[in-house]
Amino acid sequence: MRLVIKFIQQILIAAILIICVSGCFAIDQWQRQYLGDSIMNFDYDPEESNLNEHIYPRREGSSGGYSGAGGGCGC
Image (tube, rainbow, N blue to C red; front, top):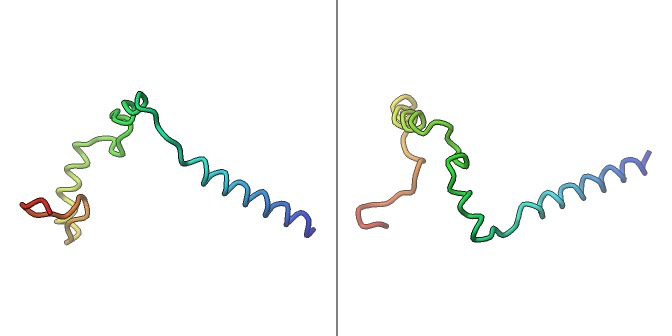
């Protein structure tokens, strides 16, 4: 029984390592055009997202968190 548990632990550790290492790779210059595609956006419908971002602070009583902070000077 201990061998089975140890084998399962080794398999899980190997799987976690493979997942962590496989996420990092370089993208060639000619492939970067695909990252700008509209299908790569998180929003399915940008107009609806804009409407929700307008309504949410009034409904929840809080605002902010959608973009970086800054003033007119660019800081």
